[in-house]
Image (tube, rainbow, N blue to C red; front, side):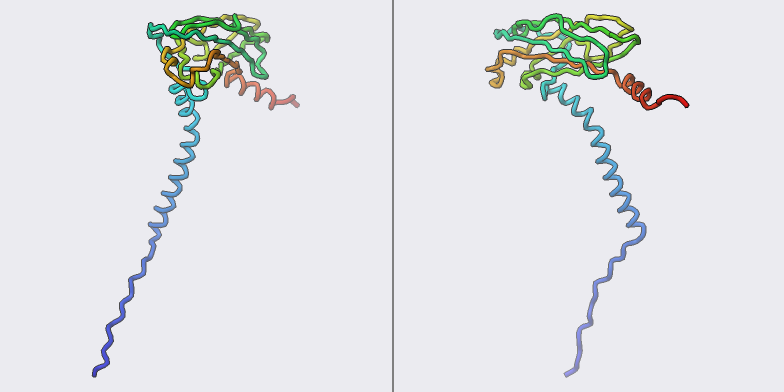
Length: 205
């Protein structure tokens, strides 16, 4: 009998080329950069989402009311605040009104710059309870743009809004009898940056 053995076979070794390593590193870096970019983009996208859906009590911005009047009458209260570092006075002309769903209302907020220089400010707003944010529709509001007042200047800013009658079909709104629209004024970003650079400068010499 002949002593014949089948030849042994070995799987060829897979060698990673230098070019493959470079492509792998570039791909990993691209994914990391992309994830970082998405994290920064999340803030404005989140704000747009809130404005579009009323999430976290963010009122909706609309072109006008739909000319339909509902049946419910709700109390709308108004709250005004000034962030630390902004030398302004800020208050609503009235504490509250009663409003029927679907009917537009106009209220005014008064602002006064108590400083000796012109200052720009922006308003941040929300509605409580949060569930009401999706039904609170603003037609006109000073919060849509930056506001500037000269030294000791005063102004009255209107807010035109209505409550969407469809809120009457929302079970989560059934027990809501009062809604609060709240504003907080902050120094505009350019104003805050200027104040920060002044503080960092320190005395000369």
